[in-house]
Image (cartoon, rainbow, N blue to C red; front, side, top):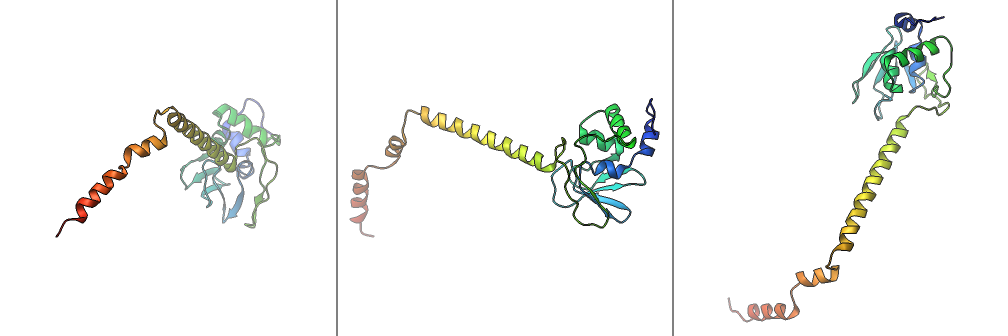
Length: 182
């Protein structure tokens, strides 16, 4: 049991990094390590490795994140070190944080089962937020284009009439070219 004041080395020694990381991502065993989809960027192929003995992680994907258990919690919870220290100490003392455990750890490599959808942002929530933001931006651009088109003094018919040749001119050109001998 970890007592206050919190010593980071003691908290790190008592923490189960695999149990902590599995609260934010699905993990399965890959040799002596665990691997899963990185919770810090969208991906299809697992690229984040967790070493339970050394209590470090490394993402070999787009974000290239790495560090120890505290770095992982700071990135996942978007908090500072003292908050991450309290979170890890609370989990190491057996205190469950409500709504944070989302995935089971798979020892045999089968697909882990999703548990409770917690308060953390999963990859699908981030992807959904990006799509909604793009949709909003597209709707604003379309509204601006419609406003400009409605405010324009020329209608589409007037613009077409200004750009197309009159029928008399077209016949005149045809009469000129048809009577020539080459």
